[in-house]
Image (cartoon, rainbow, N blue to C red; front, side, top):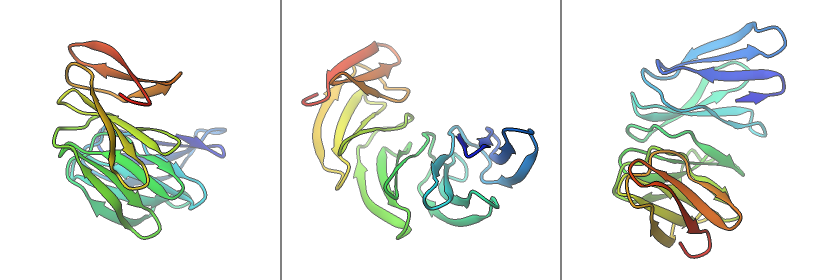
Length: 186
C-alpha cells in the first residue's frame, strides 16, 4: 500500500515496514504478528493502518507516522486484507465470520456468521459488501448492518477476492474456475 510517498509493506513473518518511495529508506518497522497473508488497509483520514494476522489472529490498528500499535481486536486466524471505508474496516476470517470493525469505537458494528472459511477480501459497491467462502457460496451483505441481501453459488471453494464490475460479481473458485453472478440478485 502506498500513500503520500510512503510504501507500507509487510511480509509473511508479520514484519511491517514504512519505506520512503523516493529514497527507499526505512522510516519505521514494527512486528505486528508471527504469520500474515494480507496487506495492510489504510485510513489516511485517521492516520492509521489496519493489519490482520493469521497468528496470533488479530487486527492491529497502527499509527502511519510512527508504526506504534494503537489498539488491537481479537478475531482468530485472518488471511484476507481489510477494506476500509468511512471509518469501518471490513474483513473476513477463517472462522467464517465477516466483521465490520468500527475504527473510532474500537468494536464491531456487526459480525456476519457465514460458517465457512473466508480467505479473500470483500468487495464493496455502494452499500453492498460481496464476499465468497470455502463452501463455494458468494454473499451480498448490507454493509450497514451485515444482513444477507442474497447468497449465490460459485460452484466450489472461493479462494481469492471477488470482483464487481458491469453489474456482475466475479468469484474465483478452486475447482469451478471463474463464476459470474448478478450483483443485484446473485
